[in-house]
Length: 246
Image: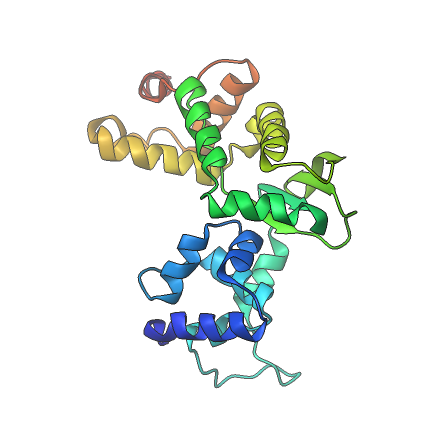
């Protein structure tokens, strides 16, 4: 595995597709700066993004990683488990749009998706909600100016915007979906990230408690209950203390 050459292979694959860094970034739901960093070897995408990049660029994950496979499957092609797993797993939250909305999304991407970051900060400050990664992609099966927001691949909201629409209208739709579906979006991975942050800031509140006395499942159930009741979950330290005493 030649991680040092990943950036070079990423550039080659992107240029072969005649795709700019901005276009690739939009399809992956990241910033153009992130793509530039990967290509310069200054950082690495996570596994899910690597699989997405391989799919968009029409190459295998093994190619991007510089892996030479000795084991070949029965059909003569490499058995790429990362791609198979990606097909099996539904994203918690995704936004897909018709090609006519590409300019609006592309412009937002060039600005670093600041509106999404502001949305995340607002939810964190007001309710203690951690929003999962939002996958943003174009979808040729949609009408030119149509969009869909999906929660675990189920359409939560859809609509059609005008030619002059900007990314703010899509942000408003995302806001509505997150507000009404957050209990479902509060999956085990999000709960673990919340606990890991508390562990870093207040280790005594977590060590020996999660998952030894309070399982992730129990904490997830309690947090979902509070969200459904319209309560804040910013008081995670107190919630852990209550659950530990039960």
